[in-house]
Length: 194
Image (tube, rainbow, N blue to C red; front, side, top):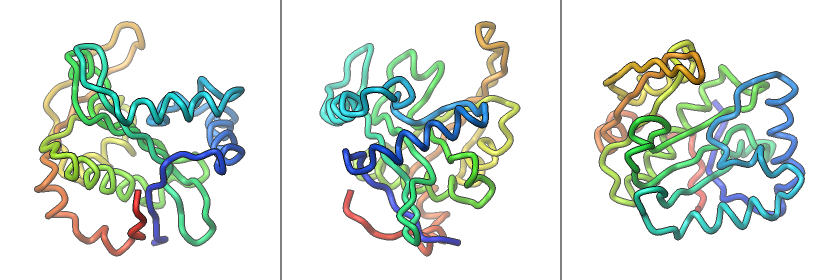
């Protein structure tokens, strides 16, 4: 497998980041874990401001600090995924959204990249003393549920969302246990400072 690393969004990645989102749109694929980038395609600089503000945000009942990253493949310096890590949970995020949202661009799926993406996110959570994380996914999204389970996710709930007409599954992962049990992924990580 390729070597991968997380990188903070920057102006230098503007064109590629917009192309990343456009690939989802062209493939009629659901967009998750991008820190709202799809809402700022005509104002990437504003999105960068929003993402940077969220890094230092204080937790409130309505909002939490979060970190958004690009998942970069070292061999060709390409964005192959994104991940949004919320370092705390509000009551609303406990119902839907959880701590981590992620995506892999449609042309790069089924290569195991999202397991590395999630593993790297768990390392970030561990650095911020987040012991357990919640993730959710559509019950029909087998790729996402396999990724979560591969990293130790335990299914704790299934809820029917009337607004979206879908069943959401909620999983919890013990961060330290997952990192200990999945050290094999270290072989696929470039240790960049993020």
